[in-house]
Image (cartoon, rainbow, N blue to C red):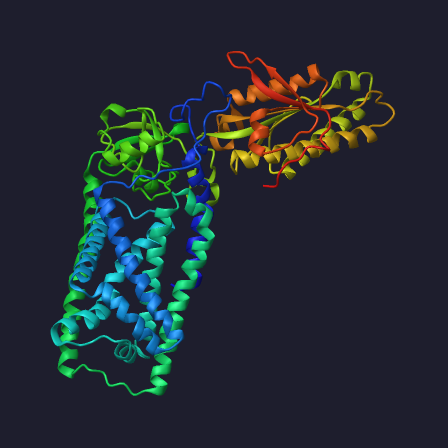
Length: 599
């Protein structure tokens, strides 16, 4: 592991999981777990902040013990960085470091934190039914198992010799011991400890909106800190070796004693690691003879599993996609599923799961896959899509295989008076005009990030915001409208004298939650489309252009989300079937004065 590896792991985690974090803040919601729309609005309320759960008591203990250990490492590594200046600077700063951590209270807190963190990590690992997990989680696990083993010689030298023989682990002494024979192993240990810490901190803090704003500054800190610490360590040790002949205050007998202590401690740690891994193996072997149950997913996919594993583990073992931003710690809601059958057989939610489900307003049939351990056959519906770019299994290649509900912007485009325009025209001219209109309009939609859902005769349905948030989708849709207006003018200028009537288009744009999924008997091979009230409303808005003689009819929800300005637009209210409150809309004839913010 090196700084480049840290950048790769951290930046990929930011990229692949950023969308899922936004999803957990309310952008992916289903009718069953979304909050009700306010009485005075057409748009459902969308949460823009998240108050993460702290999990159960074991998770809280592990978190706090990890934070204490990180505070120690940050202090220690910052002290190392002063070696860039001089060894004397390192020694002076170490007085403050030892004042905090080497007094009886500090040592007790540090020791308890280390034991707690290691024991809980081993306990959680031993409870696993599979080692299939995301790359970041596997990396953190392997590094976490390596750290106690690699750290024992350093801890033995700095603490055991001090307690038993009064050895003072000053920087002059320690740098002389470590340089140059042990410099590589010590540098590797520093990097491993730091990367393990950064992965843990990132996957804890990323659930907080403030961290999302500061994540790139955090990435810069995560890279800069170990670079500075290693630079200081190497520079200080190199200078010391060149300028001073420091006598190490450890006798040969003390070194022999230290070697025995190190070997004994490593034997204990190795034994604990082996026992932990054996627990996983034994569970696996026992499961081979245990009865099987069936987990049924949408699309007729059914997998066999053994009782005891969580639904998240079962899904991972069978390459079935389930999102899990927090790594199965009941601190997010991205692994939530709707239990279609078998809910009565599940154990009641724990306090941690209950807190998460209550926070998102989930219905009684919604559970967290990381917390439920099926004992009988169940049928589930995943509620959050997994990003296709992060998928590895066969079922994970299509993010919309299961169908998800997400707030999107839907657009309908229609060619006005197509029958009158093409009446008595040659078939070739009609087909050429229609294809030219459909091709150019689709290109304008795709150029702004939209997805062309389908062609309906001389009409087009498009979706914006599928791969981003709805606000971005609203801006993309309005910019696409400008592009479509340019297409309309170009078609009208080039249509030829055989077409007497002008080419005129009408566009309707609305925003709201829609079900996105592959529709068709072939599942993943079916066409991706949007279903829901937002689709019907967008189609209705497109027809409103006829009544207002306008080019664009757009709902106020889209304009507000995009932060757009529509000078000269007419405002109107339309009554929608089944809705008590009229929908506020804007109608526009020309878009040259419409202002849409970037983004």
